[in-house]
Length: 258
Image 1 (cartoon, rainbow, N blue to C red):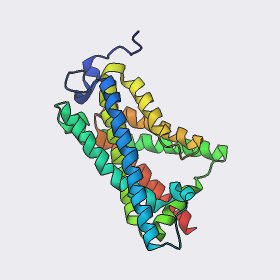
Image 2: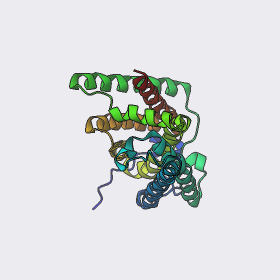
Image 3: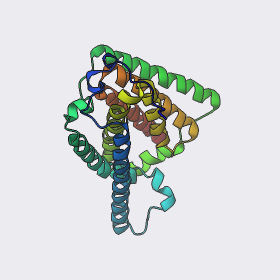
């Protein structure tokens, strides 16, 4: 039984997403995603363990409690800093096995100025809308965001937190969700099913947040996915994703200073 949506006409896709034989199909994409995710988990764990051991060596009197790891900015920054280059390198390797240029496969092209303007406007609209809903629901910024900033600053790792959260993290996530998975799914299942599924999976990976904020991330994923499909540019969604994370870091800085 085939549950897939009919394949849209080729002209409905940007050139890089048109149905062809030069890409991994949806099931191969899912299959390759398993070792990619495993590598992400293992490399992040390895980075965190190395940093914890190094911290314990330098500060045996102030060990980092296991319960505090999830909100320790220095640990998270090192984990992402170690993981992202490894995951991205493996993702490039997998794409090259499809005999397609990485630039085309991941749609690494500069967006049109009108798409940049549309993306900025849509991002502002989503953030304003979710902000209003959060205010009405009495939801405040999670405290651990401020804790993440404080612990990274106190450990002298604030620079790495900025690099990891504003650049490496968004690059890794966009390359996987709006890049690799999007390219593998959209020509077979359709644009909107792909946008919804990749947004849902992306949101669930942020399980450290309360479910309200996971929903906010899902809304951002829908917006990013639509912009990715419209513009044919992963650089656009990466720029917007990086902007959101930079705003979060700036907010955390204000929380730390208050």
